Structures are given as structure tokens and as C-alpha cells.
Amino acid sequence: MSILSILHYPDKRLRNVASSVTSINKKIQTLIDNMFETMYLQEGIGLAATQVDIHKRIIVIDTSKQKNEKIVLINPKFLNKYGSEIFEEGCLSIPNMRVYVSRSSTVKIEAFNYYGKKFFLKATGLLSSCIQHEMDHLIGKLLIDHSIRKL
Ligand SMILES: [Zn+2]
Image 1: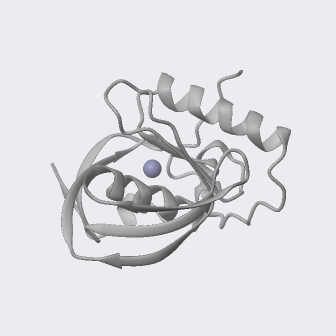
Image 2: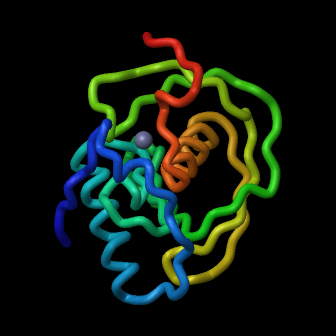
């Protein structure tokens, strides 16, 4: 595995819109392995491929304390979003900034996993905020684009 370098704001490549993954193969799986390694090293809870300059719809997440609950989202799509909640967030692409962001409290999504199997996920709390944050990255949207309040 290898550590990938993370793009930092205001790098314009963070504004690219990612394209869908057409084939979940060994190359994509290696990228995902490297994204997890990079995310854990940086002590993040989520990383979008956009942040490592790969403009494909791929996200890795692990919001667990023990760092043993890997979630892979390939070509994720919102099926439903509801409620409203203020979340405290940071971003590996904007170091040293923590902000409050208003988002949907609950999201339902569908995505493909590491093995190319389609699955559904309903998320609340930290996982919900993380999914919405990372899905923003795939369309070139950053924390600072939300109306936010700095901590
Ligand atoms: Zn981010």
C-alpha cells in the first residue's frame, strides 16, 4: 500500500466534478486500499478520491473509534435526505479549520461496495454528516461553500 498526497484548498483540482466508476477492478481496489491508509494516517474519518486528485466517484469512511469499520462508497447516490442538524466538521483538504455546518440530519443512499455489490445505507449523526461532506467533494463542493460558523 502507499500513502497518497492530499490536495489542499485553494487547489483548483478540488473543484473538479468526479465521474462515475465504470468497472470495479483491482486498480480501483488498490486505490481504495491506499485511500484508507492515507485517511488513517491523517486521522480523518472520511476521504473522497477528489482529494487525492483522482476524479472518480469513490469515498472511504470510518467513523468508529477503533478504526475497524471501513465503509466504501462507489458511485453513491442520495435516495432521501431529511431533517436538519448542525454538525461540527473539519476537512483534510483545509487543515486546522473546524466549523459548524447545517445539513440534513438523516440520509439514505445507495452505492456499490469494494466488491462491486450494490447496497443501501441509512445514516444519522456523525456518519450522516461525513457522507454528505464527502459527497460534496465529488461535485467539487467544499466546507467553505456552506454558510458556516467558525468554532
Ligand atoms: Zn473534506
